[in-house]
Image (cartoon, rainbow, N blue to C red; front, side, top):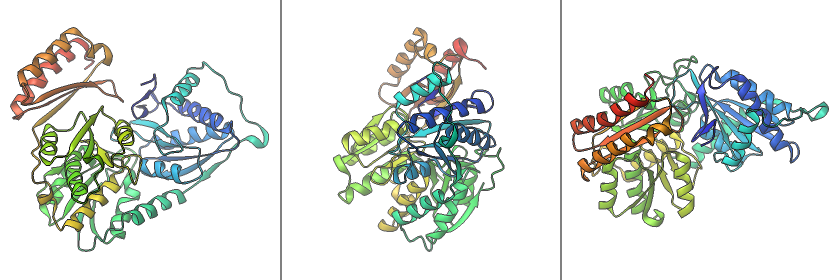
Length: 446
C-alpha cells in the first residue's frame, strides 16, 4: 500500500482526509498522464453520498485542465465503471465511493483500461504529484478538455447485465435493500425487468443515509422483511453495489461463503468448475474450508481484497472467487465484484436446479465468528508488537485446530481487525477479547 492509496483506492473523511483539492490534483495527474498519448476520454461515476458531487466536479476539472475529456455517468455502481471502461473507448475509469463506510467518508478508485484496479506504479506517481514532488503544466487553447454528461453509460451497463443473465424471474418474490446507495438506480429496474416482484427497502438516498442501519452491513431490516413475508430471497447491497449478501426464506443470512459453496458445487456438477477450484480469502469461515474439502473442491485463499482474489483467479484461470463480505467475482463475465451479477447468478441456480435457498445451503456449517475492530494510532506498530505477536501464538495454540484467530490491519482505515472462529460464541468472545484488549491498551485511540 502507498501513502494515500490502500487496497481499494484512496479513502478518508471528506473535507479532511480527502479534500476537493486532493481530488483536483488526482484529476490533473490522470488528465496529464493519459493525454501524453494524444487526446483521451476518462469515464467517472459516483455513489449517493453528500460529498460525491464535490469530488466529482473537482476531479472533472482537473482532468479537463490537463487535456482529457471527463465523461460523467452520475450515480452508478462501482462495477458499472469497470464494465464501461473495459468495453468502451476510455483510457481509464474513476469511481467516487467509500463503499460500505458511513456517509461522511468518501473514496476515489481508479480503473485501468482492462476494468481492473489501477496498477500500483501509477498510484505511486499520483502520490508524488499530490505531495508536490513534481509539477505539471496546464493545457491551454484548444488542448483543454471538456466535461460531458454521460447517462448512456449507465443504460449500457443495465442492458449488458440483463442480456448477460437473461433469467426468467416471473413468479419470484424478492426483497431488495439498496442501502440508499448506488444500486437504487439499477437493482429494481433489472430485477423487475426480468419479471420478479420486488419489495424495495432503503431506496431513497438523501446524501447522508447511505449505509445507515441498512444494506449489507446492517441487513436486519431485510432479514425481518423476508421472514415476515412469503419471499423467495432477500438481497442487501452495500453503498456502491459491488457486494451483496442475501437472506433465505427463513430470514437467515447467506454470506459470500454460502455463495461460493453453492456456486462451486453447481459449476462442478455442470463440469464447468475449472481446476476444481474456488478462490476465497483468509477471512472465509472455517466451515467453508471443511465443506469444500468434503465436496472434493479445492479452496485457495488470498489476502483480503477482491483485487487479490481476481489476481489469483487469473493466475490459475479459475472461474469463481470472492469474499465472505459478499464480493463475488465470476471471471468469465466480469473483472470485479458486482452485487447485482451475484444475485442473478444465484437466482439462475435456483431456477435451473428447482431448489430454494434453504435446500441449496444444506451441507455448509458456519462456525461462530466474532470480529472486533480496534482503532489505533499505528497499524504496523501494533501488528509487530512482541506482546501482541506472542498473545496471537498462544491463542491459536489454545484453539488447537478447533478454531482459529486472525489478526490483520485494515487496508482502508486506521484499524486492527481481530477475528476468531470457534465452536461456540463464548470461546470466540474470550479469545478475541485477549488480543483486542492488548491492542487497545497499547495502541488504541478511543
